[in-house]
Image (cartoon, rainbow, N blue to C red):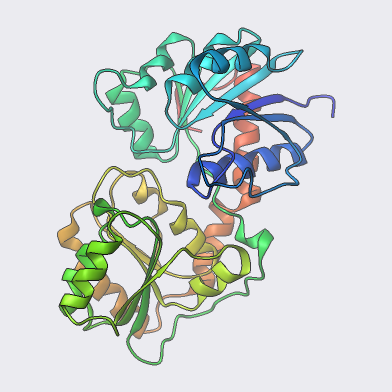
Length: 365
């Protein structure tokens, strides 16, 4: 490939988080298109497997302490890189990219909310030699530029979710038509700001529309949530399942529910679970914080960011589903046109090509 790019992706290559998912699938997609891709990652955390994808199609290097980080970044690649993309926040990752003078262009990809964390936030390093920033969603991009006083090149491109369309069989879903009340679920981390406790406390109102709530995920809040479910006698209605599977088993879980709920109230980027639900034709109700509003579509409901609007949004979509006006196949088309694996790899490839050639300006991609 005569015009192949040499790309360094700085992320995390292990575990099951959104950064890992995005880093792997972007690296995989660019490599499939003939580009020369390397990933550099911190060493796996204790107890985590080295990689979920042994047949990557790209090389992975690691770094640990500061000296090792600077040495590792400085010696990567004999011919240098056309562009490096840093996803996630850290002094080592951003400083390491700045230390390698054979990197021609540097991009910081903001996958969180864009909110600044104190005066010593490592993302200030964008001003020390990064060429552009990319936000996972338009509101994330705007907030990052405002909080970090960024006036340079900027764009909005979503992160890559797990490409379920490649890993599983997903038939068109058709109109959502439950026999009775809706079967709802939550997928994600069990942290206070994620709002599962809110769903438990509001079950009296939610149960008017929902038959059950299945909660998939782990986190520090699980014992408190479990205790509160038992205290309220809701064990038959709200069930905690722990980790959820990937691939076809994950698709089957998403397609087996009528509604996904995401009542998060804290700092948020743009949760990939919402894209994965779209891919399966499963509608959602989400509290519109962070970059979530970028996922708006006619078959789902997103609040203004006020959690007080969440229960009315559930009531509204329950009425729409009951009237046969929520089309899972239409939601899947929305996903395929805007967020599918092929679409997002193409957007990233086009953006990186344009950056390397000097074309992007300050407008969004």
